[in-house]
Image 1 (spheres, rainbow, N blue to C red):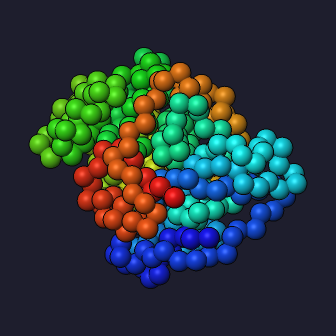
Image 2 (tube, rainbow, N blue to C red):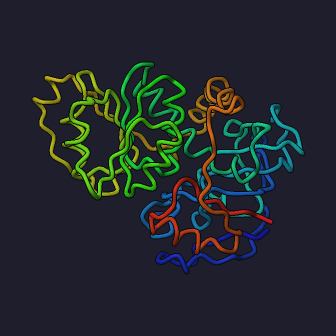
Length: 323
C-alpha cells in the first residue's frame, strides 16, 4: 500500500509517499480501506518529533482518524462486515491506503455524510464528548467557553454544546472566523488579536471552559470561571507551566482537569465509542452537526496540508483524500 511517511523530523517537506506492507489484523481488528483521513494538530507535533506514537503503532505514519470501507475483519469481530462504510479513531497510521483498527474504535458513517466529512469526525467527536460532557459534565442552561472556536475541536464543541442547550462563547483569531462560529451557533466571539477575552467575557462567568492554549490563558480562565466552574485542558500550545492561585480556586470551588486520548487503552476507547454511538450519532443523523471542511488535499499533498494547518488560516477540518 501507499502511505505518507515521516522520513525525518522537521518541516512539512519531510512527509513523503512510500510503499509499505499491508497491515496484518488480529482477531479483534478490522482492516479499513481508507477513503479519506483527517489532519490534526497532533500530526504536526508527531512530524516535528514532539509527540511520539504509542508502542505498537507505526511511529512514522501519522493520522488519528479515517473514513473508509471495511476490507477484512478478524475472526472475533461481530459488529462489522466487509463493504460497510465506517469512520474510526486511531492511535496513528491513518495517512495510508489501508489501516488496521480495533473493532471498538469504529462507528458507522451516518447516511448524510461523505467519506471526506466523516474522516474529520472521530478525533474531534471523541475529544469533545469525553472532555466536555463526560468529564466537565456540561449541562443544559450552563455557559460554555471554547478557545480556538474555528478549529476542528472548536466547531464540534460549539455545535454539540448548543445541541445540549448551553450558551456558547468562543475565542478566535479573526472576525471572519468569529462570524463562522456564530453561523454554527455560538452566541458571542472574541477576537483575541483585538480584545482580551477575560475583559470581554468577565460578566458571562462560564461554567465550563475547554482550553487548548494554556500559558497566559490559565489565570484568565480561573478569573472568569463561575463558582463550581470546570476548566478542561486538551493541549497547552502556549505553555505548560502556569501559576495557580490556590485560594481563588478554593473560594470558587473550581475543578481543573485534563486528558489525552491517544495513549488511552482500547478498553477505554471501546467504552467511549459505545456511548458516542448511543448519545452522539443520533444528533449527527438528525442534522444537529454540520461538518466544516476548509480544504481537501490528495494523499500525496500531505506536506501542503500540514503547511495549511501550521498557518492557522483554516476554519474547520483539513482532509486528505485517498484515491
